Image (cartoon, rainbow, N blue to C red; front, side, top):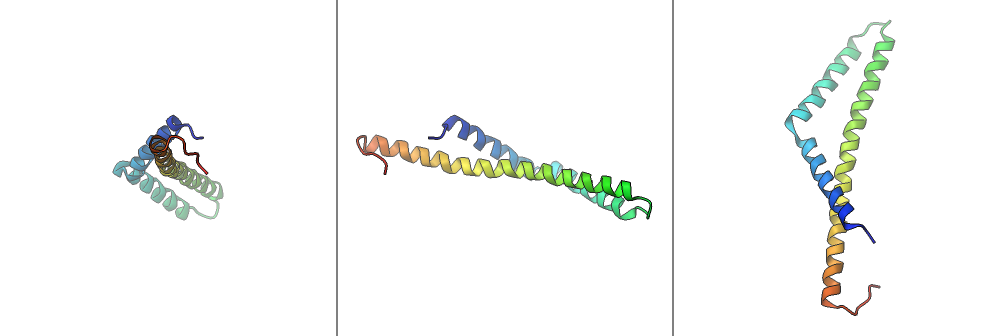
Length: 102
């Protein structure tokens, strides 16, 4: 059985994460950081390997950050499905109190 309060919390966190990914300022910040890092990476000379590696690592961290937020969205969407199933089960039990699930 699923803990409905945890599912509701995950749903809310997913909704918050979705708002973050749609937030104009945050999207612009991610895009700006990515563009600047790519420009820095491309403008380094032959002796700029350490700086290119720093840029690459930072780009990967930015990608991971976006991924974490996207995972919260997915968990929230999954929680919505589980909450609906729990509600359906509650309704079934109210309508047919003696009937067992198969």
